Length: 403
Image (spheres, rainbow, N blue to C red):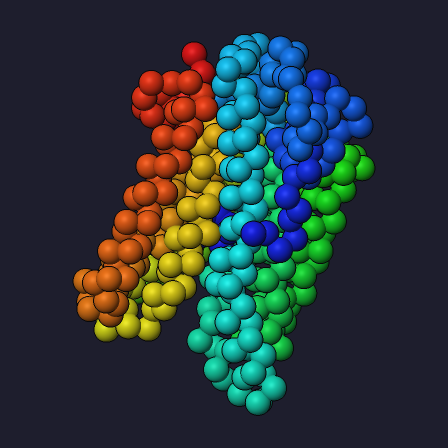
C-alpha cells in the first residue's frame, strides 16, 4: 500500500524454509525459525507428504471477510511434482515484499533531509508546507497495518510497516520542532507510537498478554474507523462545510461495535467483521491517498508540475513488489491495498504527469510496460505453482476463498 500499504535493508534472505505443525503457531514468515521440523532449503532433500500438507495448510485461500484471520488451516495437500516450484515461489514472494523497503525508504528520505536542512538553517516556515494531518493519518495507518501483519507473522512486511512508522514519526518530530503542529498532539502521538511498537513487538515474540492485545486492537479499531470518514470529508472542504461530525459519528459507531463484540452481543460473523475493521480502515486510508491527490490535480492542474515523477515511480514499485506475496497467500485486503496504490497512486499520477506534458513519452511507456509485465508475471506464476489452468481461478480464490 502506499507507504504501507512499502534487496531489504533489515531483512536477511531466508536460510531455512520451514513449516509448523502446531495449530497454535503456524508461520507465514521466513525469518522466525521453529524449534523443530525445519527443512533446510540449501540442502538436497525429498519432500514428504507430511511436510507438503503443512506448507499448503498455512497458505490456504480464505474469504475476503477472513483476511484478518492469522492462521487459516487447510486439509488438502500439494502434488509432489509441484512442491519444489511452490516453495521456491513462496520464498521469492517473501523476498519481493521485503525488498519494498528500498523504494519506500528512498521515498521518505528526501523529505527528512530537506526538513533537517531547513531546521538547521532556522527556516521553520518551510516546514509548514508539509501537512501534519496527512502525516498523522499515514502514521496511524502504518500502526494498524503493523498490528495486522504481526498477527499473520509476515516478517518481511512487519519490517516494512515498522520502518514506515519510524520514518513518518521522524517527519512529525521535525514538524513539532518547527512548531508546525500542536505540541499537545505530538506528545499524545509519541505515547501512542511508543506503546504500539512495544505491544506489537511483544506480541510477535509471544510475550504479550492476550487481554492487552485485545485492548490494543480495540483502540486501533476505534481510532482507524474515526479517522477514515473524517479524512474523506476533509478532502472536499471548502466545497462542503468543514465539520467533525463524520469522525464523531464513526467514533461512536466504532465504540458501540467493539463493546458489543466483547460482550457477546454479536454473531460469530459480526465479531469477525469487527476484528477486521482496523486492517481494512488502514487500507482504505491509504487507498484514499490517490483519490485525494487526483482531486487536487483536478482542481489545480498547474500544481501537477510540483509532483515528483521519481517519487511516484518509487510508490508504484514499492507497492507493486508486495502484490505477488499478497496474491500467493490469498490475502485479499493486502492485495487490494497494494494493487490500488501501485495502479492509482503511483501509476495514476505518472499518467497525470504525462497528460500535462511533465514527463517524457519514454518514461511513461517504460512505467506502463513495467507495471503490466509485473502484474502479468505475478498472476501467471501464481497460476503455475498452484497448478491451475487460468489466472481467473487464483483471482476467484483471492476474493471468495477456497470452495
